[in-house]
Amino acid sequence: MMNILLSELEKMAVALPADERARLAEVLLQSLQAAPIAEVEAAWNQEIAERLAAFERDEANALAAESVFAEARLLAK
Image 1 (spheres, rainbow, N blue to C red):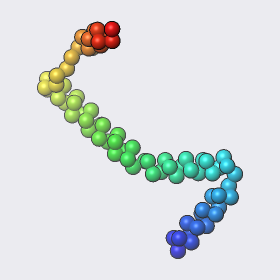
Image 2: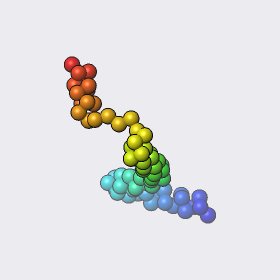
Image 3: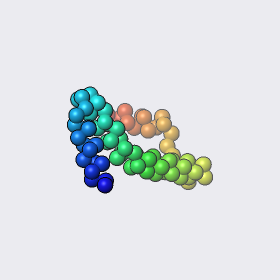
């Protein structure tokens, strides 16, 4: 049953005008990427929370922005 539906969808899709096929392709590709992007965002949110908590506990090796930029300027010369 699923293969028949897929075959019909494929026939309908290739019959679409080029701009509509492109839009369909974009939507399908985004649907494949949605889960990994959500997982990456969740992992970064966890990392941010952990770093912030460490900073607030005074456990992070934090540097003043001025010193970081000063060193970057020296290295860029």
